[in-house]
Length: 455
Image (cartoon, rainbow, N blue to C red):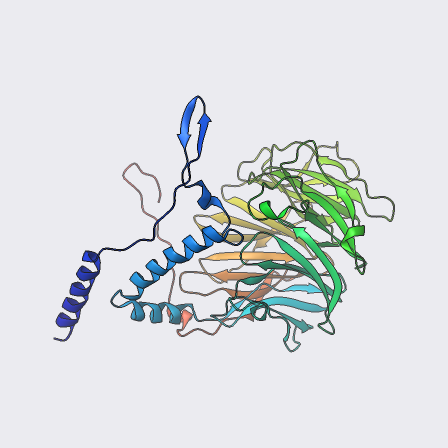
């Protein structure tokens, strides 16, 4: 009986809110007219394209608009109930996929409602977790984030990127993992970059742009990205430029070092197009001289792993749903050797782990995974916890250990340790949630449509 007056009250309040006119703050116009293809085009609001972080007028306008919005939302009936329910649903632990280096295991963790995930380390698989980095202490508004991070081969050093206020710009710092103390290294003007360590931990490769002027810090065009080598303990001013394409400044470049430390691979793309070229260089102590391994921007080439001069790539060359081939690092002109053929499911990724290829597929809107030998023999399927999404499976060729995260409609992201030697997975970390995921079953049901298509 009490539901009727509550509903009527909500309806009455909603109607009152809808009837009350909203007083929007005034928006200034600035006379800007340009000629485009012979036509005069007015753009009086172009001034709003200024960056809110550096343009006081844009910031003032944005804050005024937000005040109007927040006032309206705060008066909505039932909003507090809705907010409380959404907060409860989102308040569960989140574990990142671990990465091993030198016997240490690094992973991110969020208690549930933290603005930023923290970075933890374990000394060994069963070691006690130790907090390494807490970005939540970096800024009062919680908008400064831990972005990319990578440990050196021996796990002694960690390069981590700081992202301020949602910008794409990063600044890379380095800390001593044992002590948790930062080193003096600071690498700036980094964007859209990997951090690829030399095997001996003496430095790392990264991608950067030229230092922008203050007016274009957040609005300038991303051009002239290049790959650099930073040596630990030295200022950025003495870093060495490794690769650039000044004749085509809109190309982007990211670096990766093979697990054995023998080669540097540089992937080149244009914009958001996934098709890429690949440059390769020996890391044998001599001058680093990248040369073409895969020329042109015609196909996808994603490195699955390397063993000696053999490089396994996921590619869509001759296979729209992708396949795996081997390239020879020392003889780029040799034709790719097929290893894993194209199938009906889409091949979305692969990793070389313990002399095996872990191959991930997407079939019928769900994740699947298989284990293959390096010469192209299928070992078997990888048993996943159910119907859902599995991501990860990265690892090293020097051992058979890998990790993946699985989630579904009723299962929050749960991390598993996978062994390519036994083709078995074991639970690594499961979040504590306010319900029992095992109480729910997920089924996939197909039905023939009117024209006979299976959906």
